[in-house]
Amino acid sequence: MRFRQSLDHALPGSAVHQAATDQSVCLGRMTKEVEMARRVSDRSSPVGGAPVEEPVRRRLLAEATRLFAERGFESTSVQEIVAAAGVTKGAMYHYFGSKDDLLHEIYARVLRLQMERLNRFADAGGPVAERLHAAATDVVVTTVDNLDDSKIFFRSMHQLAPETYKTVRAERRRYHERFRGLVAEGQREGVFRDDIPAEMVVDFFFGSVHHLGTWYHPDGPLTGEEVGRHFADLLLGSLRP
Image (cartoon, rainbow, N blue to C red; front, side):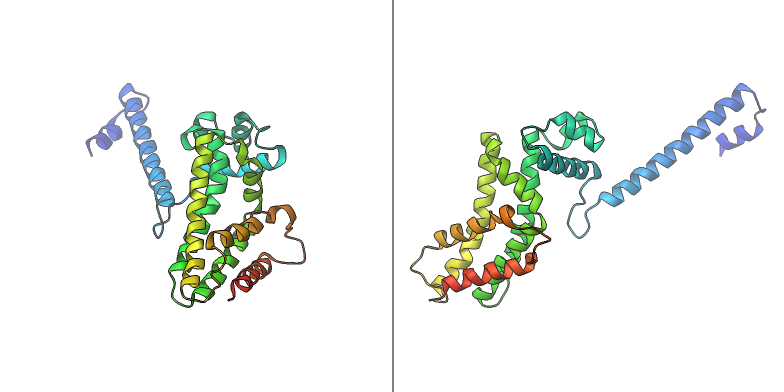
């Protein structure tokens, strides 16, 4: 390379030698930065179609969840969240437009997981009673596994901005409608009693699910899986013709 040859032949301490050395160091740094960017890109690339959550975004959600649980949503400031996460306000606003958006995402990430799993249960083959039982058990287990998130949200959702609150209600409604579809399917097939509207069955069941945070404790006598099976048994028992 001409650049390498000129560096080799320049006298040590000369202006040519210093300029060439600086340029060589600069090129070395650029190469390292490109390699580092490639490695970061590889780590954040989707695996199996699922995007990897960015570390900064994850830290913001984790610290917001902790602070909302300790101090309450209304008493926690944006500055406290970014300080705990070790980022700037600009970094937070890159991912979340407001504190409302953080609270929304704390719950929405659980709901997305539950919706994905419910779709798998609903679309699977087999008797509708078995699919409904599996779906009912799962929503309890995933709620218990993310109990802090659910507790924070249901305690603070009334403080959301009207538009955000409207969005949340629409997301929850889509989940409930998919769940209700399983109940209605069983009613059409004569597997479940049809003298009670499917909508009322779903509202009654999820009223119990949403209150798990008021009494369930991980160190209690029942595991989340056991509570889920009991809830599902009660649901299916109430639907027998």
